Amino acid sequence: MNSQELRAAQMPLKKRYRQDPQAAMLTLQAHGRLNQDRISVRIQTGLGRVEAGLHPATGGDGTLACSGDMLLEALAACAGVTLGAVATAMGIQIRDGLVSVEGDLDFRGTLGVDKEAEVGFKAIRLKFDLDTDADADQMASLMRLTERYCVVHRTLSHPPALSVRCERRNRSAA
Image: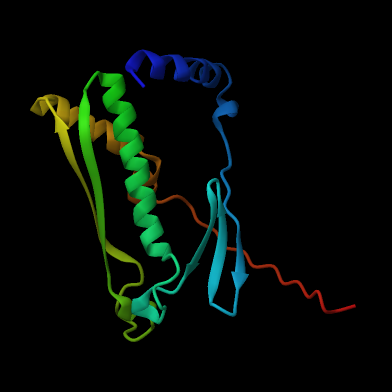
């Protein structure tokens, strides 16, 4: 896709969202089915089912996806797509590129071994390795705009309000 094709695809959306800001407000959803036999959750994605379970560092056998890995993968995917769109819009040619994400976890927290140990990622590093002729100013703009418009990056760096609710249902009760 070149910059003209990208603009043509996005222009009607931008026009609509300017005229009707509510049209831009969407609620994305994800659903999973618990599987207590495997201590896993089956998530239906747009491309098929993924089953997530315990990471080997928490007792898993490594045959199931890990939600921590999936979080990092989501960042890599979103940042890569965003960088590609920004580069296209700016007219920067990316001949080849790699996106890498690393995250540091202390599994003592997750397993409750040490109550002082944090649960969750302590640090996340996002790295791009790009084959491009872009100059330093273009690269700086590319990175700044990628960080600005990447949904997953912005969500992690500016956490939204998060709520949790649990509803009890008892199907065995008559």
